[in-house]
Length: 142
Image 1 (cartoon, rainbow, N blue to C red):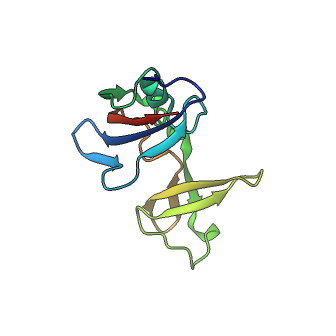
Image 2: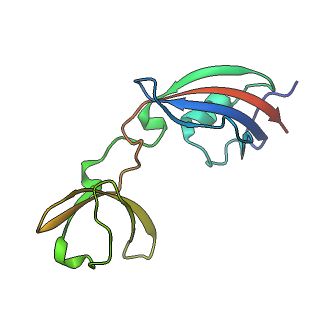
């Protein structure tokens, strides 16, 4: 039975949980996730954890934030003057918006605070700064 190695296509089922046991994502009820091992298309810690696994193998691994979505970075929060945001943009706390960088890239940001003079936007990934636990089952390696 082949063991997963860089360049292989791997299909796997997974359930991702936080430290408190709450599920943040799962393939349950869906097709297995398929990716090329070593391609950088999934978080680095999970890519490494699946390396060497065989079809049918199961394991549970905890991925530190540094090998998942990174540490939470305070500098990724920005206060924007309220009058610089068009009135038609929804600004309820928790709303996800898209910002454009000076070089034209789109980045998602979350509205985390609003007052009469400013809106605080957070560009951190929602799972930044969190250690993640994954229960994985490799379905196929090709």
